[in-house]
Image (cartoon, rainbow, N blue to C red; front, side, top):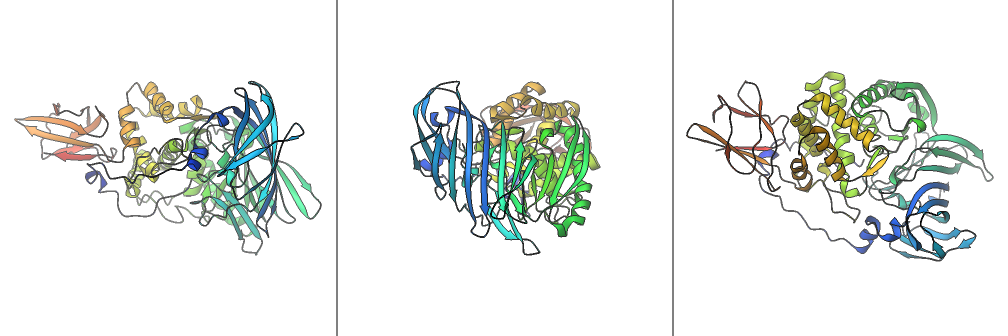
Length: 552
């Protein structure tokens, strides 16, 4: 997750300010964007099954070198394929069955030609040898790259954070979210006295010549590219034993700087087990039992690196000590632990095929903060937290971005997306069913890459409702739907004003102080039965519905 929000005192007035579509700036995309974001036959011709990334880090020179083994299954006959590596990194050679393969480069894409046709169904491998100085992030995790800094003792402290920018900024890979590798060995050699912490489980530590030490980490479960992480520092490891989860004991391991050991033990103990209990209740079993659960102290705010969550919230509750919701609930738990761990279910277990659908990662995970609050303090507290998130919504662009060019939608995918999901829960009007829908998503799409349509179709099927117009309005348009009322000749008429043709959404309405009841207007004025409701006492549930209301 790259945090795009700020503490802005706005958003609460937006429902009445966005009745018309806001102007959007058209963005021009380049061929380089298409090479990075599209699925051409040169990418779909092979399905990655395994990587062995083997790199050596020269901290002083900020230089990285090594190799990556690609094992794949051919999905069709081909003689040419594409992998990705940033142009500032040098491809030294590509080796296949003792051949050095010819290759060409365009932007950050590398095109390899094989000496003989690779047949559909065959299992093959090639190795890319490379080196260079990777991109250094200016403000990680908001921008992608390496972070080179020092700890309080003056020892080197290095980390990666590359969501959005792409894993290919530091290692050769098929850099598209649609193809997750099935398993992976990550070997990182670092100068003596330092440790590397990466994803999965530590299998071996080997002392090398020249004062280096290699750390071998193995990931059993599928993993998306941007989650592959390198964390190098003077780390101290401690364990909090195991968590008795739904799939048995889950190991809890933490890697922190020695000077923060006492604070880490206290903060992690207070947040991790309650988080796991809440999210397993709402979303189903933690998706990566075989790889364990880790928190790794990082020199940036945080990132959802699978089974090695990067943590940089300085051992305090809230978001850097602040309650993002301004409700009083968000400063009772550690935002980074809760949010980034929520991505283990949405983002890591369920991954969007195209970064344009990144709302699937961020909306559900942002919503998980409210569910966690609910688990601790009750449903009213959780819903108040979600409502408080509206203060950050900009309604600037659709939540879904343009496809095929490696471009995300609006940063509203966090808070507006969370409010969308809370509305869907309100419409379903059955918390047991809603919980089963959330858990069912994790089961139906376990370790898969998905599209928006798949997620929406599943919610429709399980709820028994057609919620496609609702999702389309909030995901594909930046303006809010307006619920308009007219009172004429003793009757109440209602309609929706929305961008989606034929838009309809059940909504809760009442006479002030009474019981809410559902009405289901469409885009044409029609009478609605609301006993006792007048123009003066009409109340719409705008606490749980993020909409505009107009009463004529």
